[in-house]
Length: 278
Image 1 (cartoon, one colour):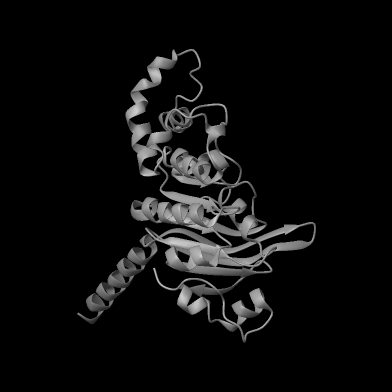
Image 2 (cartoon, rainbow, N blue to C red):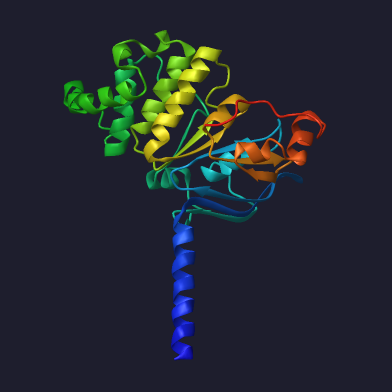
């Protein structure tokens, strides 16, 4: 009987461990990336909880963009592992991880300036259907995608701009369009690279609310420099400095961490800015 109870206890522990693993959509284990002797990412282990907004912050040169490039496979690590939904994707190519549902937005402008707003979203929908290169099909055959394209434009507040040329959109609206084209690929994990960079206050607020909205049924991992944005929408924050994670947790915790304050302000006796609460 004692042996049976022990085995049952082990089985329960295994189940709990499995459930805990299932909570995390993305995990990195001891990632290292060197460039000619310079260690840009040094032993970085992250766990991104499914359905959360997870922010990666840090001063300039902290390694945030390099981590993003490793996650989206534009770089291969010198050491460590990357797991998505429990599967090792460390050596997979960018197209493979995109097909798995890991889609990055904002690393470059993801829109075609001389196409209309709705045409940009249709291209994203074509990619999802695997018909991106069917150039011989008449344009009207893509009309079947219009209903979904308009639905996505409505989600990001651009339904009234559907027929505008993309080049005519103001900067903040272009960013909203990039979110719509990313959503068209139906990502399970969205990686947003500095989504509010270069924006005025009104656009920052609009895009912040948009990120919160699209995160309702997917996971978002974002690099962001604006502490007001991070404090308002991030569930978990990982702070990088010199390629290493120096703190992790909710904003209320990391904003008071002496190492974080030292990294940002040069002193642990100041307060990290940002609006508090969600």
